[in-house]
Length: 120
Image (cartoon, rainbow, N blue to C red; front, side):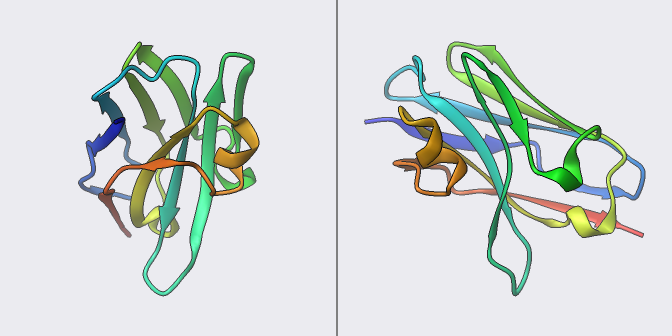
């Protein structure tokens, strides 16, 4: 069974940077698409970025500031620069063999999330 664990969340000032990691255990990520999502207090879960072997995609508000990358066979990172208070949320990673399942929020496997707080 694939398990995903997010790490790297923290409190940071606006304009700062954070690097989140999504690490898989139990089995390798293989060719799965991996995505990052976030959920702010009182709001629904929002797609942030996804990566598969064809490339990556981003939600419009994070383009140019966030970068998703495969670090190794079991880890996908999300580099977040120029952070804004509106980026405050719990960030989750998700994985699925189907790209569209990931970007639509219907991925099979999910992590427990890591808190990112951006102060103004």
